[in-house]
Image (cartoon, rainbow, N blue to C red; front, side):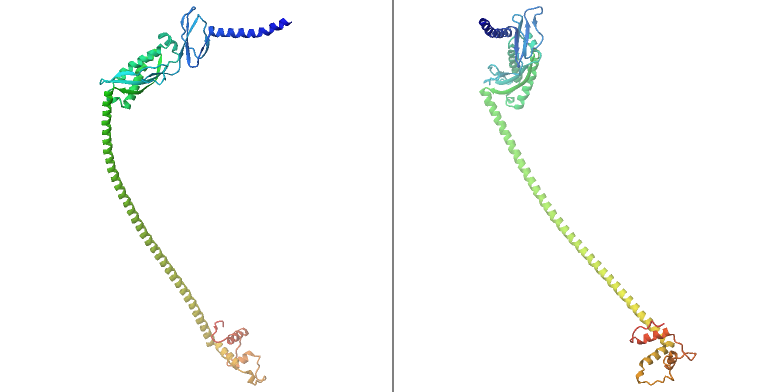
Length: 389
């Protein structure tokens, strides 16, 4: 019982240890890992079909049976070739700058940076055509130095300090290097010309030429500045003249507008006064006409009343009026009248006695007419008597 427990206690760790050991052995002798920045090329060295497998193997675990499969791993990222006097270690090793000789027979050193990359899907062909390892890097460097001599060697001393010329040469450099390496399954990303160094004699010559060019540029700039100052002064004078003209035109316009406004105001006031006078005259005329018309109507009414009064007086009505006047002026208190001889209630008889007569010898007075005569005689003198009919 005790022995069984001990056996169980040691069997489990031993099993785990054996599993790990077998896993490590299997990884070491049966699989291989390709990194994320790598491409693998597999070569069958034993079997029915031998040779390079026409395929690029990407990142991950792949079969690698020892004695049957051979693997070569390549960097698939963008790589840098730096040819400089003092490399910045962008590349994997130090390389000296590219030495060239210019068209006018001067020695020049060029600092170059080449960015390149193995073509996608062509790594197995690079392994087949060039071989194992980093031989392709040596080919890239050799082709770069050769093209540098041919392309940059066309330059003359005046081109060495011309940035535009350097850019043109770099573009031509990239085209030729791309054409050279297309069969080597390498893509050129960029070509940069960092610096060009000359021997002391050429440097002094270039310095003198540059100073002369700078003096020429300075003189041209001074001449242009003087010309521009003259143009500026002319522009200032023209601007001042235009400004004065604008101010003068503005003042004249204001004066003219002021005069026109004053004239228009006077004309409007005169028209208003004229309209006021005309309307006042028309009102006065209308007033006088209405007043005259009223006076005329009054005169006509007075004349008509006088005419009617005269007509009334000239006829039988006149006798009646005289009789009424006599009767009005008679003081009955001083009179002694016999009622036997005179009937005061007999109107016709009384009128006859006061001097009223007719063709028949006796007057018949209508009581209504007699009342109107009495009312007329009772009114003050000067009152319109036109009511008598």
